[in-house]
View 1: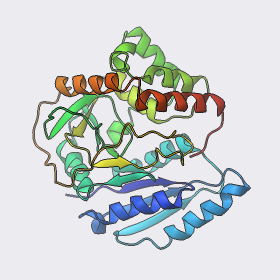
View 2 (view 1 turned 180 degrees about the vertical axis):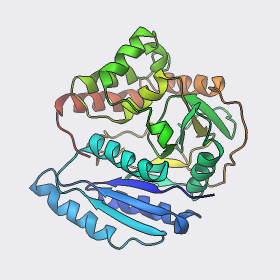
View 3 (view 1 turned 90 degrees about the vertical axis):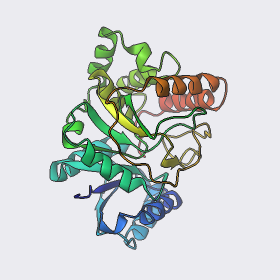
Length: 305
């Protein structure tokens, strides 16, 4: 099996980037994997200092087959950086594992991603693999599919990324014309449709909402683990795009989750459990966190990381 390159996006959060790298280094396939790190340029003079500190640390990274650092000297912002970086890598390798600088990972994360990329390489119904799953109460199978795509530790192929549509208005129109808006929002329990509308209006610069919508309107599927292989540590108010929110926190699974043949269709029970999870948190952390995000995005016209 030819291992996928790993693509990591960093900006000005040194502590978070160190945690992500440390978790990657503890993965069993790290020493045989190529790591590409895209470092965005500072947005202002104040950020120059912290960006330089991050870049000094990046020079010290080892534990991988190769480490290649791509520095931006101007601030590209998150969406432009991610879209361009992924496009560059899949054009060279046909597949990619994508991370941002605020993710803790299971030591089996890379194996799950690489085996999944190999297993579903030629199945065009499958657009991606995802390492994070919400801390759900019910029992889930070891792996299952959901319609759409996701953004907290994931992987795809060039054929999958070719489905990405940058034009949010086009995606919004397709959702409305197909009467999919409510389903897109997990039966009205999560504000994805509003986030897409805000992206069109310039109130946020989210690539992720467009990635989810691109997969959703084309009825593509993403493979998830039954227990999360990823934990987001960036929901502490440190990121440009993240309000403080602990509703998504759960335990990382430290056991290997095998890739096995399963029905390539959305898992109805998993979807119901996620809807129930959203419903149970509507008046709690999820709703408060997303209200903060929507307010923040409404004030920020030009966003970086």
